[in-house]
Length: 277
Image 1 (tube, rainbow, N blue to C red):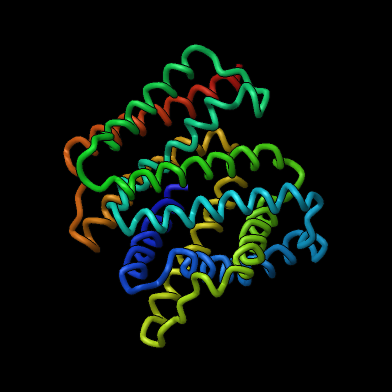
Image 2 (tube, rainbow, N blue to C red):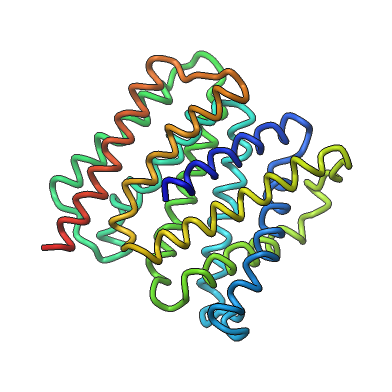
């Protein structure tokens, strides 16, 4: 999972470079989903057979893919405005939302300690956001909405868990994402330039490798064991932002990032203890 987070942060850095070269967020996302689908399809066939390419629950799979398509699309839009580390921290509101809504949507008890952790996590988001009437906060709000849609994606994952092999599930997400994006092609598509072919190929390859690493992680350990390591992406996002763009979050952003990270890790560890109990 840590390797997946390193790869994903690197991929996000390249996405920011592509956005600076006039590629729209949905163009970048369509390229990512297309390449990922083409690479995952033969792997799914090899591991689970050709029938695994056809999902059992079409409505649920399509809805889940819609959530992640909007969520990631908004994230790629957000990094046009703000540092990758800040956008990543804002998106990490998603696990907090999942925990907050779990009693009503997932029939999972919340508990006093996790309630406090959720509240603290949202305080961290406010520290990063620092909502005032001054300055352009567009990127922060876009990243926050992205986190809401990714929270819906995570909850859909839990609802569909057990009904689909993990690798096939990753394929459905990308494949249906392509299907959902194609009808609107004329609204956002930017023709790739030949000189950008190498960077586009690198971006798509990293996106696919990150997806495969995440799937591999879930095949070795339970999701609640792996969850805390997802927060290492903030470290790698900061590193990539500094290397590629010389960008470092300011003092208050660091405080907010730390609060969000600690709250998220606490919730993940708390879930582990509850399941062990």
